Amino acid sequence: MSLALAYTMGKKVAQQALAMHREASPIDHPDASITTAKITDGAVTTAKIADGAVTIAKTDFTDQALKTTSSPTFASLTVSGNATVKGTLSVGDIEFKNGWRIVEDERHGLLLISPSGRKYRFTLQEVVE
Image 1 (tube, rainbow, N blue to C red):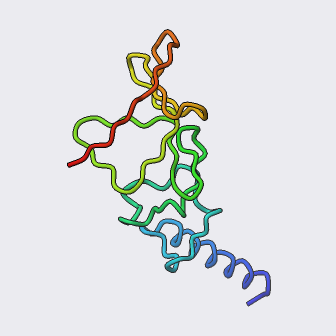
Image 2: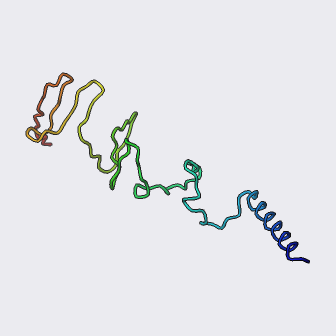
């Protein structure tokens, strides 16, 4: 057999092996061999993510509504129905649908601000049971 014929046959065998590999379902890559660079943006679906696999530490939120440091901070959060917040919920100013706001004021503490801008101070009285 000539060297040219051996080369051609080897090339054809390699091409057939590659075609079989590409057409296999699923493709026969060893576990953990797919790198981040090989995954197309938007290709990972909810069904492919294991329960508990996504944590705050593993996320990099870039959406304006999801800026995070060590815990998520939401620019807006809508809760409807009966909801329970476990742990600590840290918020800044609170704005209500009717235009009223509760804000933190360095001089007066918490203030209630009317839609027209009038300020009202809270008077707190300790509850003794």
